[in-house]
Structures are given as structure tokens and as C-alpha cells.
Length: 154
Image (cartoon, rainbow, N blue to C red; front, side, top):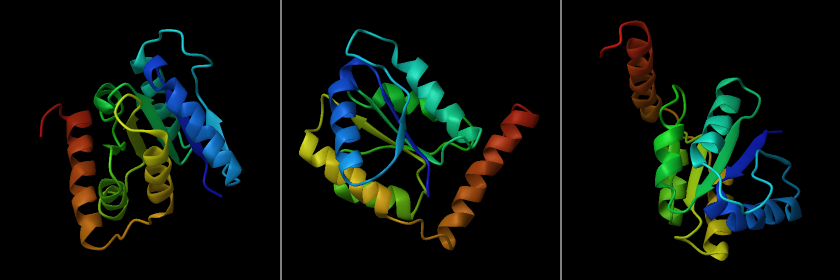
């Protein structure tokens, strides 16, 4: 069974709690990386924790939520091997899995409602990666990561 993690900042806390309840009702087990309340926090701390957990193979995929999703997008996509995708509609949630093998779903807690967020999460979790021609593109992205790590240039 796939290991899933979730985190937010204060602006995404309410939606995070709603998504946790939604997933628990469906029998999905997930690890909550925080925060534990809606007190003001710094979103990079929570994005970093999820990205590192995926890199270290402690979890397979993650969900992160901040006010708009933009801050978390910037943070998580700095990590090699992370393909975080900001989704506010079902089509994007489906395509980012099919074509990009997205391993972090990013949402804006102040942008989308709970009902739509639940549908996005459900779509994202249940859409498989197609591979094939799309894998070739992911390989190119991974090549960028390797070149930047070893040479500092593309």
C-alpha cells in the first residue's frame, strides 16, 4: 500500500484537516506532517518536510496546502525528483498524474472549497502514470537535476 503524507501552513490548515477526515473515511492511511493548529507558521518548513520525506522514500506521495498553493509550489519543486503540481481543477489533477507522475499535490486553501478539494485529491490519488512517451520527458527532467547537482549548469 502506498504511503501518503500531508502538510499545510496556517492558511491551509482548515482544508488539510478536512482532507485528512475525507481520506480517513475512505480508509486511506496518511501521515500528518503538521501543523497541529492554525497558528501562524512558515510554509517552507512544511513543504521541505514533505519533499524530503519523498526523497528519502519515507513516503511515496504527499499533499501540501497553503493559502494559494504558490508558495508550496515554489518550495517543493526546488528538490530533485519532486514533481509538485498546483491543482485547482479536476483536469489538471488527472493530467499531472497521467503525464507528469506528480508526487506532490499542491492546493490553495483560500482558493478552492472543500468539496472540489476532495474531488481533486480523489482524482489525483486514483489516476495512474501512463509512462511511455511521458517517461522520456521525465527522464529529461531528471537529467537536468543530475547536471545541476554535478556541474552546477545545464
